[in-house]
Image (cartoon, rainbow, N blue to C red; front, side):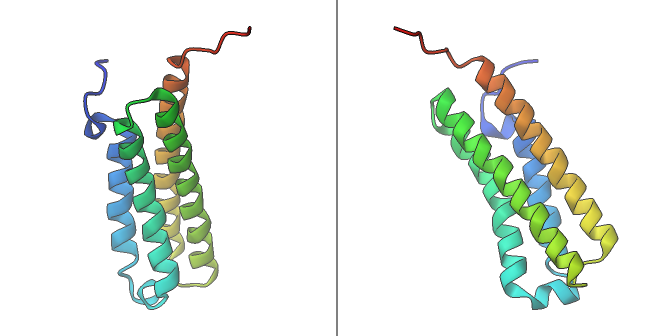
Length: 128
């Protein structure tokens, strides 16, 4: 597999982009659209996932990239938490919650795999 030349080449970023699109569809549903604070925070978490992957890739430093990937993974977890809240409040259908949670988990898994790959390429500090 060839090395990514741009953040758009990263599977994790591509999956995060799909996640943002799916959240945009979900927050337009009748009941969820009425809870603006929750729907806005869901979209912010999804967008943060996508943006942190891109920003980290462009940072020019492997340790910095890894730090941003951790933030992206955290944003996926935040979104999943909000999905449970929306389901519990009966403003998001269970099947839509499950679809979005599955997409968020797969995005998080891709980010985790990318973190591991980046970590392997970070030189270890020598002990003095």
